[in-house]
Image (cartoon, rainbow, N blue to C red):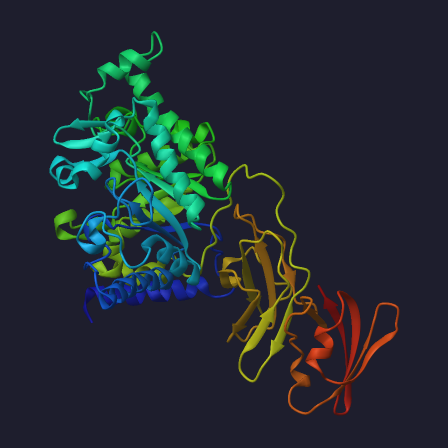
Length: 551
């Protein structure tokens, strides 16, 4: 069997015990994400596509990765939509990445971001458009693009530094440009979030060539360090405000350097956001210009735990999802043991991290050292809902008005009327009434946009909640015994007793007046006006009464 096999078996046993009813509860909300890297096709796509057959293969490859994410009970995919001033969507500002067709700017035969959003939605996964902000590209690559390159089209916001091109944070127009890109994505695509990466100065760039801009734009008495930090803060604010102006429910998040600042007892050795890149992400949270962050803490032991705890303590109550370096499991990435990596997940959750984001998809999809196999049974035994947005405007949604369950020969059909403003619904099930919707183990179908679900579960009781665009969950409505509920003009789901032979029914309105008498007729019920009725159903030698609610 081997040691790995024994470890997996043990983890499966532990997960089975923990999941059993009566075992410890599992947190219901969590960021469970993965960075899906398109730069150089590191995660996807593995091959260019210029023919219809190649396009279908490219799309199928992405679908396989998303299937794996769903099977691991992840809930968020950070899809790299902007790489190095090249994109994977239809843009007025920048050309398509060569990773799709082999040629920069060549339009592919489909829209990758639109496809990714659609396929994520099918699987109950959130899709956040991941934008690499400041990096424009290596000088050799920029030269190949010629007049279509960003430094040629917008030289006023671009700067060459150590053989690479960057957007210059010291130029106010840089923030306007990045905000325009984020706004373009939000206005054209049904993304759940905008995810910012490299939203900082180049690494250890004390000599970044911005003296001219500092002299021109810095307020009197402001140090170079303060000015640079303020520049990044201002850019973040512009992006955040633009996104929220387009759609206030689209989240804004950032992948930030793993260490916030130097700590008294745990030195950063000069490698922290504030010291090395003028990136003060805690200030963004304090200013309310970020919905959550994912610090990239790709380090071990004393370089991991104290810095994750520091982030959580300086987050102002905003979610902090630990960015975990799954690539460290590779021999050339550090050759970490699976045990060391899993310890980071466990202790991070004990610290109060809002979840984890894995860098990157390849280590999960290739099951490096068994990571892909153990995630669901060891840590993600049940689905997780996304944490609610802090300080969201308005009030949470009301629950659906009622819930209907129809028992078939094998399956059950559970339905409920839609709730205006709902982003999705969560279906719960239990053998205990009322269904405890605070217990994540009772989640049967998370994040569905449907209002009718077919389930093979043998539970006695069901409940459903509505979640708004800010991920606030409504109170639950449970199945009311003897209650049938339909939307006006919608398909009618009659009780199982009405299947087969025709049986007579009588329907009375709230005043007691009989509005229908005859055989079971779905069309007749569908024709009823909105309101509450009582239905008397004669089934062989017995009579059943149901509350009939038409929404």
